[in-house]
Image 1 (spheres, rainbow, N blue to C red):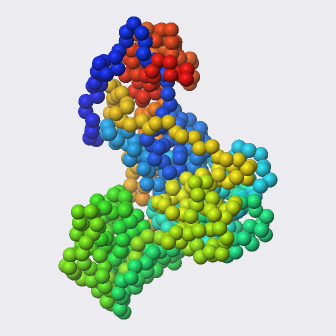
Image 2: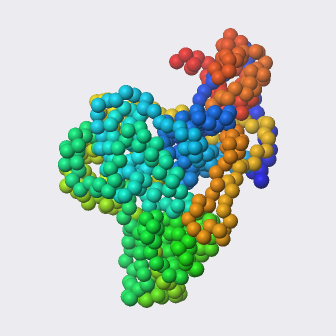
Length: 546
């Protein structure tokens, strides 16, 4: 394990804060700030809180805190791209806390132990229709059911899960784990009607007597690009490939497969092609690796499985089994530009992975709804469309797309719907400032190497669609949670109390924090510099009472 930061000696310049004197000008105050992990979590999880319970071995309580925001931890522990870890302050020292691995452990443990959800309010007597049983629809249904509302989901497909089922390969998202988390949501009383495609929204709402509606149909239609093709090899899109494979009827691709695109779906398509028997799979992408939309680890895993990637290359023509590709170069603005240099590739099948868009055509006759140029439904800050009582979220609204973003949308929409049904306005609370690494004081540090999930050996992966990553054990999950710095929240290490030269700090009892005696505090800031997680701020004299 490499240590990124080797010198933890704190630099304290007493001239910068004035120190103490005959008149106190500042005083210590305990604060709770926002950790960077939660700040960037699309689902809005209180990561610091559930890690704190997990490190104490209180796994049931950790799961309860986690699922207050996100009902599918076993899913997200596997498929989320964990931006929380990119922001983790521990990454500045050695490596980020493996948050996703602990989350998956909690989700899997909940399944094995049979933990269930409970509503937090009595029945409201209000009914909400949700169109689409993907991550956003399921999340919204869960949160609405917790709030006491009756929820029904109409799903056009044969199973719930949306793109979690049909768009993410089983080697990343085992179908049985997804089904179990869906079943837990259904057990709250959420009714899911499968193979029911909504074609007349107004009639659906009126017939069912619904008080509000949440649209969450996702983006399951592939985007296409015009490529001249004459008597070409088999051309299909990545959405079709992944959907048919997940349905148990994979297409015949042949020996040589070219995947056109550079996103995560392109990586999934290429890796799926290898498992379907392609001996040569090549990804063609017009930008370089630094500018690809796919996450770096996705490309690494694809390469480990024998997928080749031709960076700075674009397809210009397909004739029979021959693909004409042109080399590109990145200009000063970071955009790919043609070079006029061509080569020929051979392919039995070409898979287009150029992004997805929503099929919102059935909504065009709904008064008040507006759409952007890609067919996405436009919503306001409350996630309501231009039609009163009809909300929308997930991949079908403008913005970034991912399972976790869609899940966060579902939660936000549920709370907005609840407020609207109650004829109230949802209060938006501004979170406190985010704790950056330079705000921490870490004079004492012990090496704690990140827990790595065991992975299936490369060649064995290609034998089928079995899950390739193993989960953590209870001991490993607890250890990994203990690597958290608890940025911005006191965890009662007693450093402040031990360091105070005036005995101005009193411990109130386990779990109750500390109290500062203003008659003794001189404002020397010793406690501030001794607090490892920045749970103490020095505030100007008099501001505590303002």
